[in-house]
Every structure is written in structure tokens, then in C-alpha cells.
Length: 216
Image 1: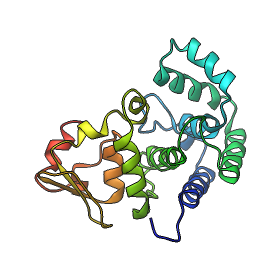
Image 2: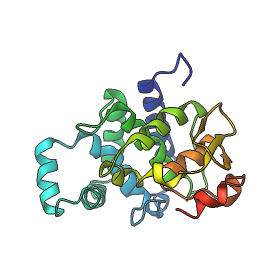
Image 3: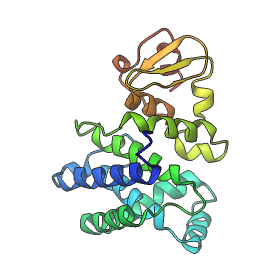
Image 4: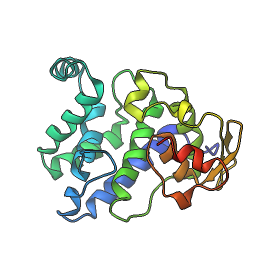
């Protein structure tokens, strides 16, 4: 990150950018399948709206009903929350951007991760430009690579295992990770890869690209 850009600043900017994207969508766009399996755009938006403000009691009840599966809890909650409607979703997203709300027990960078990655989950299927400033790559990579099992199950699985034996090289910011054959890509492509999403083959180049794409 640039010295003048703080983590809260980045998170707020991404959240506000996501709100602007949603405000420009048609009713049909809200129902388009996202990159998140079984979630539509509206479900992703509902997840970003209410996951950061879920109370401890509500979370315990939802966990029990989901058979103590965090992934099942997240998936079911988002679909349930989406029934509250677009205006309620947008109002809650605006409140989260204003207050800096984040899920209980999660570090501040988790809110940035959600805003960036789920923003791409929505924008890519709709053919919209991503919003991944290069300075957000380093904190997101540190977060996802440093999150151990079982918590990494909710952020795309083990990024560390996915990129083992490969050197990731960003083409739009001074950032590298690992050792081995190079896999080169933009900050956006590398964020997708680290979070278990599949970038287009043309977005990753170098002898290590084929290795990491085969693991997705």
C-alpha cells in the first residue's frame, strides 16, 4: 500500500465502489450467477451486507442449523438474507462502508478481502471492469497465504498449497512470492488465483502458470 493509503481507506473505497456497481445494475443483472458457486449477484451482495454485522447469538444458532459447517452457514445465510430485497441490501452496505463493520473475530484485512474478491465475483460475470488497485495485493496475499486450516476453507481453500513451488510475480506492482518457475499476472489475476478463483488463461503467463491453473 502507498504510505498515504491505509487499510481502512482501501476497504471503504472498495465497499463504496461495490455499492456504485450495484446501483448501476438492472433487475435482471441482480439475478445473474456470480463466480461464487450457487450464488447470484443478489446473494453475494446480501452476504457482504449482513455477514459483517451478524451477532454472536445469531451466528451460534445459524451454526447449529448448518451442522457446524461454516461454509454451509455462509451459503445458506446469504441466500436467506437476499430475500430482504435490493434496497435493504444497499442500505446495509452503505452503513457498513460508513462504520467499517467486519465479522466478529476477523482481522480488519478480512473486510478488505471480502470487498475486493466478492466485487470481482459480481463484476466479472457481468462483463464489468474489476476494481483492484495494485496496492491491495500485498495485504490480501499476506492474509490469504497466512490463514491456516480450517479458517482458510471460507476464503477459497489453502492458497499456500495452491502456489507451492511457483514464484508469483505481479506485473503492475512490485510484488513477488515464492520460489520456482514464474507465474506472472496483474494484481487482479493474482488476487483471484490466491482466493481460489480461476483467472482467464491469458491473464497468467510464464512456466509456472500452467502449474497453478491445474490446481484450481
